[in-house]
Length: 153
Image (cartoon, rainbow, N blue to C red; front, side):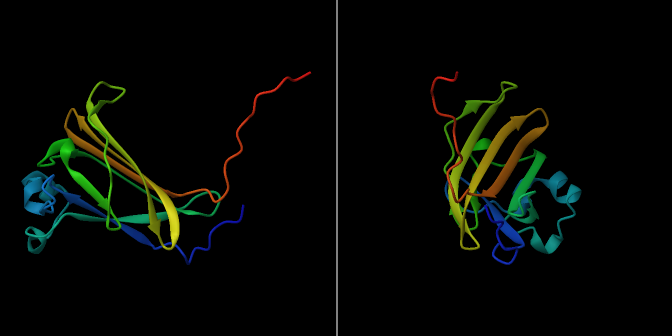
């Protein structure tokens, strides 16, 4: 498989946070501790929470995006909605994580830089706030071969 050209994928993709009502989460709603810890400029406090997720190159030469943060004080908890590159991620109903914590998961196909990417998201309640993870990787252009049944001799 040929690696994608580094010129087709954007340097960053945008992650946005929304209330279940569809209104954007505003920086000041994340709490004073979050604002101080992340050195959010005072002029941004009334603006929507947006994150630029930097692209990195995989061993195959494809651009992927990976973001995670822990200890977040999300105003709506794991009911928070996430949007990647303008696409609202469809989250599952509440599940239990391996550690038994409430969690919600998402998987969607999103067009990024003219290519189809698989975007996966996780929102989990942790011991010290909420944990969020968003990963986007290029969808394989050819099916991955899978073993088929048969008799070997």
